[in-house]
Length: 439
Ligand code: HSE
Image 1: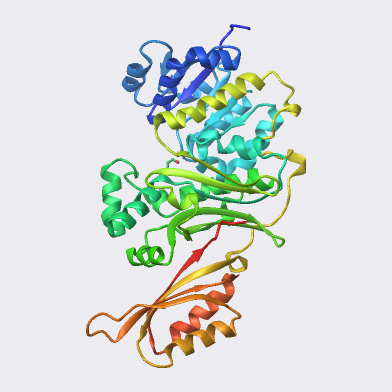
Image 2 (image 1 turned 90 degrees about the vertical axis):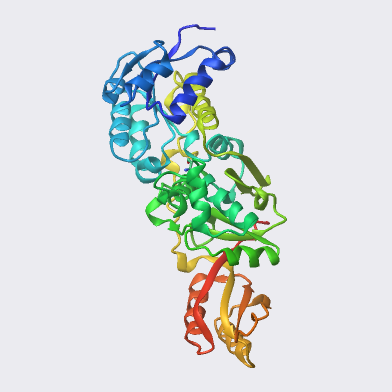
């Protein structure tokens, strides 16, 4: 076993960087036995020099100039943990240009600029590894790209944002409103101070964009993803869904259909009996359906110092093992050979086919249901279940909940417009999508 260490330059020593440092040190012996040689952090860049010095305790060079790391001749692998698409992109591109391998947890960067980054890496014969970018510690990149490589993957659906899953779990458990739980999530440190990317579904969309590329061999196309978060979700719908045997989860979904690829993030009703419906709190889970293997489920922590470090270090070991291999013989970045990518289009949301939960506030009088079902029938929409809640004491209006069979989004939207125009329906119709997540 060669004992010459491989040298790592770390950009950012915050939560994940600190975790990477700690785990690499703690498990150095086992990691070396696996990698074939020691993996050593030789240089750290962080704006907070005091913090960097405190964590590294004199074991490596510390700088506040990240560009010095990506240009350092002794650094073999650059670990980018800065985040965002600004300076992080410049640093990654510079590292690649300098012939360095890159390990990154930056889903925002790869979902928006991945095609350019992977192409540059390909040209230069270096690897860009990103296990930590999707679902933190869950080895989902490895599973989809390598473990399931025999399969024609049919769909992927995941709870890939811990903050929103925590919020939804609390809303359901305690019957609390979104705003109240969000404050609790912030107090506990789950949500970012500005939690927009989490609650509006953008973070999940970055991750499902990457998963879709790995599953179907298509370029990353974040700009074509349909994105809805949970900020407008009403606690009453969580309650009604539960009464009907469903849980509401923020899912990232990507499906291959004959017409193209669905790529969407939105609150979704899923049957309570599914394992994935029971993933609670800040945990993540990804369900992948392959034609040969059937459904497979991956569960674990999607964030946090050591869970994410687990993924970063797995990539470091991979790169250490593979960096001397002929670049042509390495595992392709997006699972499929770069010259064999598919141009399957991303479907516009109007063309997506799924089933729906509708909640309407209606006048409690004869003929109302008939008017509504007529509109649905005219749009060829078949009804799976209808429940009318008893009006409250002295109220003339009642909540009506309808579950539809599968239909096209365009049709349900057309029906909703007509239903909202009926005099007997008050306000807007609440529409949520449902997924059986069976075969
Ligand atoms: N903000 C993310 C989440 C963690 O809440 O899951 C990192 O991807």
